[in-house]
Length: 451
Ligand SMILES: [Zn+2]
Image (cartoon, rainbow, N blue to C red; front, top):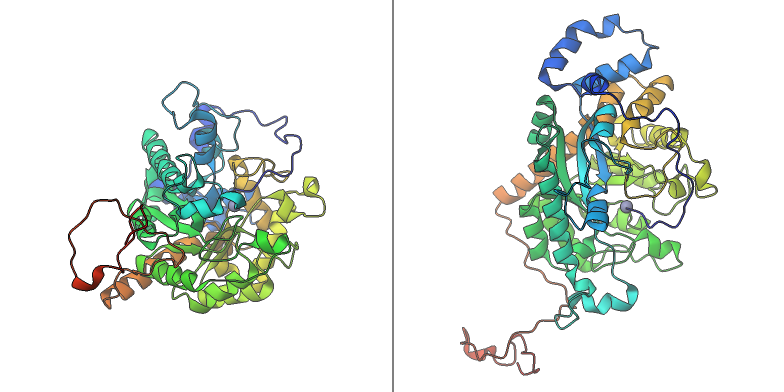
């Protein structure tokens, strides 16, 4: 999700008619049956290397194309107040949004991290984030609203079982693809959404969230955001409590997303994480000078870390000088740069579809991924490099994050009980029993202020 600061005309023009059912059948990503078929009917020996469309279909029949970031759940909140069983939610037959079922199938999508996004607190409300006496509609309800986003993502995935398979681990993500389904996973877009609490973070893990974008466009108790530095603020990087967050994410097996964080935060997290990191929707600062994007030293360190940079389609970051001029070729440039600096083992795609008002020419919606792959092949990418880019890299990272968690837990690492030192603790007025003689004066104070 990106703040909609730039508007332009819709690029969906002629030739963008919904496909027929027959076309849809042919466009479906493989599944086991088609994989076997492709091994005989479309083996590498029989494909003309310059037939990029055929090569793309072949590779994406064997490896899921996994996108790191799509904000459709936020549109369902905004426009339907989560009522997807109404007649208005025509997901199967087509929507104006950048994502619907037909476009996903045309786009040969094999897996999707659905972003559960709730906006940052207004700076004037910031103190209310941890104030239990704040008004019922204040930003402290960001945790409730995040729960609602997870609820709708799971309900929406369950509503279309012929299309989606919900997954909360990398093994399932592979199985979903082999079942011919679009693996559907959950990522939280902003550390503010866990309410400054590692306990809440753990519960979001239990609910299926598998990455957290460490900041959105606001600083939080964990780290400094790129937007703060872009506005002239100090880049303070990761906070001491942010280090506790990193440790707990590693222990849980949750991927740490560095999209949206400042450059210093990127470096600080790379210093302390024990597991590979991800950029779920980012780009190369060496190609366009958005502070949101990873500089070359961070790309190299991401390679050492074993992580991945998934390239976004947000035009105002791809072309800060002239966003409306952004095309699919700018995205290819970013992918190519990351592949050159960090290597093909560390690049992927994370569109931000339906989280941004306009996209590059040629990447209007989720049906367009095959064209992106074709252009990478035209520029010289091998099938093996495309397999990594499309899905093998993010599946490897996810598995390594799971393995690190298993090792840490097997070593006896317990849930992290650290709490934010700005936390306001209160209890009700009832005179509760005590566990300790010396508790008076140390206890959480009551609403009246008495300990
Ligand atoms: Zn975003």
